[in-house]
Every structure is written in structure tokens, then in C-alpha cells.
Amino acid sequence: MKNNFKLFLLLLMGSLIFTYSSCEITNVDDDICQKKEPLINGTFIVSTKIKYNDGVPYDGLVKFKIYKIYCNGTINGKYEREGNADESGYYSTNYIYTYKYENLRDEVKFYFKINSASEEKKVWYEYSYNAIKSEDANTVNQMFEITLPWDSGEE
Image (cartoon, rainbow, N blue to C red; front, side, top):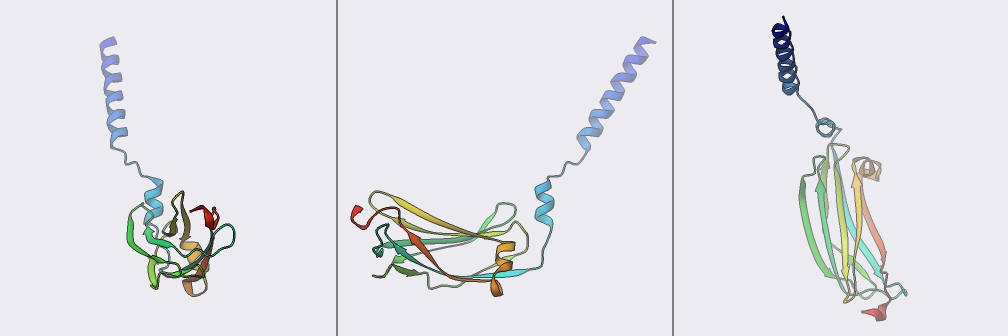
């Protein structure tokens, strides 16, 4: 009788382990990433005006990078530009970037990178589905103002 009980427990445990291992475990993030929202085309027309901490316009090299990060972390639509800001500190990428948003976790990130001999500054901006949806006509047409954390004579 004891042997039958042990055999019964062994079979019960084995079936529980088999049943548990065959259950499908879903990731909540995967479910969120599968949920589609109404398609939005986000358009970005960006420029910047850069000045030093002491108010003097920056006229050096500016690097610009923009890309989309999908809900699942995939990066796509990566574009990079660089050029010099003019004597008033103005820099434009001179391009129009358009990205499709279909999920609440889709986002477009971009930054302006400014270097000096002593320091580097990246100024990040990001637009999620809801942020671009709230923009007028889904277009970000903006000049971003950047103040560098160092004075003009510190290069």
C-alpha cells in the first residue's frame, strides 16, 4: 500500500511538472507591443539656437541624430547630420523627418551634440505617441534653444 501511495505521489508530481512546463507564459510588454493605435505620421522639422553660458552665440560644430525606437526596443530610421552653427548660434538640419507611430510605446528620439575641448554636451528630446498626437497637425516644427554649461572663453 505504501508503494502504491508513493507511486501515486510520483505520478501526480510528474503530471504537475509536465502541466506547468507546458503552460504558455506571456510577457505583458509583448501584449502591449501588439496593441495597435490609429496610425499617426509624426513629422520633425528641427533646428537649434546655441549660446554659451555667458550669452555669446556658439558658432562651432553641431552633430544631430534622430531615430525611432519601436515598442519592442528595435531602433530604425536613424539619420545623422552635422554642420556648423552660424555666427548667431543657429543650426538647422535642413531636412524633414517623418516617422509612423502605431503603438503607445513607439517614440522618436533625437539630440544635438556639441563638443568643446573640455566637455561634451548632448541635449536629448523625445516624442512618444501621445506627445506627437497632441502636436498641431502631428508636426514638430521647432527651434530648440540650448545654453552650454561653459563660457565662451573656456574652449
